[in-house]
Image 1 (cartoon, helix red, strand yellow):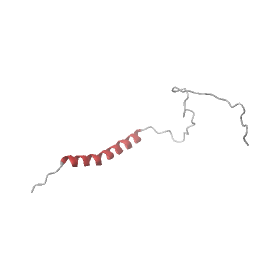
Image 2 (cartoon, one colour):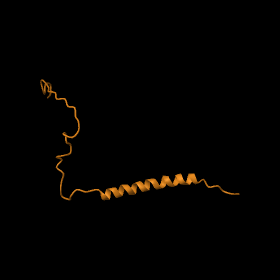
Image 3 (cartoon, one colour):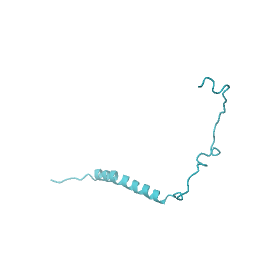
Image 4 (cartoon, helix red, strand yellow):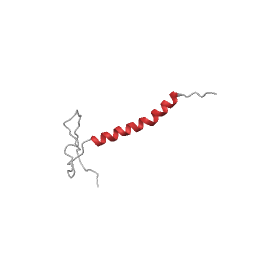
Length: 71
């Protein structure tokens, strides 16, 4: 009796095992190469949201009687 190996099945199984491992290795390498902030230097948040970048629609409204009915 001869046994037939389904190489396509083993190839897919190998891909399922190796692909996440390779992706994790690339992710860890990109983290290692990313610039890190200087130690001891805190962010002041000055440029966390720059309103001048992009296109924005704004609407300014004003309450006629602010704090009416509040306690």
